Length: 294
Image (cartoon, rainbow, N blue to C red; front, side):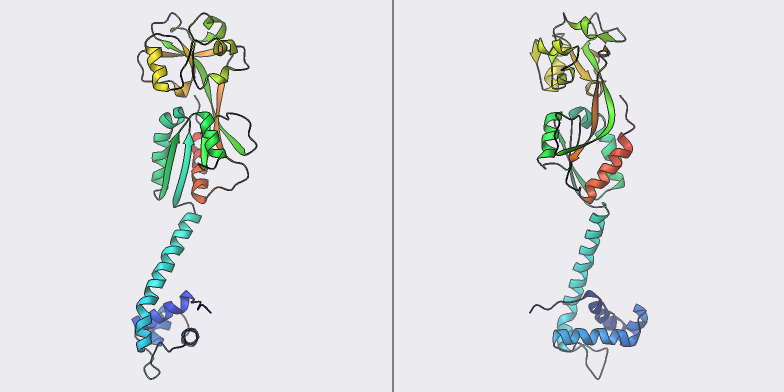
């Protein structure tokens, strides 16, 4: 039968050795001497050997000298494990995997994650930058704890909590005749060379769906898309967060008819609890990003 050891009596043994007597140990630990003696006697019975000499109560037996460094190591391991478990339970330590759409990753995550890491320095963040479809897929497959994205398609496995709306607009070269407009209607774009991209699905089932249906190009990579736009090869639509604000060759003109927005929220598995560290991240996301407006 495997021997089970309680940690507290081991602490009593160490205290007796450090203080040199049962009386001193009891005083240090704020326990009565009979209670301390009884706990050590019970430990000795469990071990099958005395730890202290009977004639000199604070003197270890040879067996006690063998046990002492092992008791110290066991107590250290116990305290280290208890602290780790408590930190994880409180969301102060652990690892979280997060997937976001590229515009959120580049525009919002740097400042947000810097603030989060300052508040939770012992939580390790693994960030994936993917399009909305893959963000939802990664969450549904359990590859990441949380996603920040629009919902690609209805999926009963996923839970969505709204954060903010991201306005859709037309992106075109600054030399384009429509570049100085305050807003544009989709009918004004019918004769333009339209470059579809991963976010163009937001135009589907709207009055502007024909722009996507009759596109001249489809480019999923943002770097290639921007290069085509800078070359004046066409126009596209993008959420405002996805527009490169420091680009001097392109401009963003809001689409007024139809007025479209991209819904951005937290995506997680509907029927599975988050780890404490992921809960901490979710709470900070809700606190800091719910107020974002494009």
